[in-house]
Length: 288
Image (tube, rainbow, N blue to C red; front, top):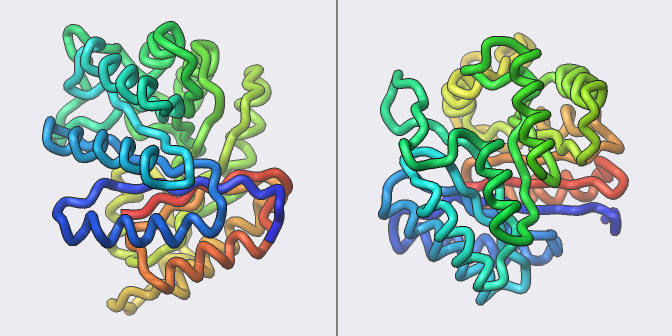
């Protein structure tokens, strides 16, 4: 294993007690990779937010690995966002992933809370004034699906960086050349913070197709052909595709997403780490 490899893993809070127990067992197994932190997504609605807050604090108190929490602007006032952030800081948690967030109603457009942060850049600015937070933001190699064009999207990214963001974790992609072009354009704008590419090993192709259509990620024809006629969940084949993309990014690290934690995917995580995909690189794996 590359001793310089910087790893982090992302979790979606479980919906019930059985899921919570399984998630915690998986989290404890992942401690063997000595990740830099475990991050937790921020659910929509009060009940889901409480689950996220609970898990972030549980990781802080009961894991050997530092915790990081996601925060979103959707349906939250500045006071509500700040309250959660300060509660984490009080508990020794200063790592935050700041996101605008997705709207909860299908086919509706994002409208800022009347007393909330306007967008992720505004949140980064506010949180940096609030306390000594280490903040990650999102980047989009194929632009955010709601952005007018790539230029506007990069300008928004630069604004988030200018407000004090510490690193960028990109949306997943299947064509590493698109990431490299995105990275080069970002650098040309004066963005100097780390840009960590997102990689998605495919465990369920239909689910990935649906997710990709929502977040604006293009699936190449060669991947479509790889899964043509297959109805079963093929973790091994999907992980192989993710690994091929990661190899194209050798020396740059990766942010590895996944949907289900099982022994097969644990093996995939180990494979990514052992393949030495980068020097002093970062891997962020998201699991539900």
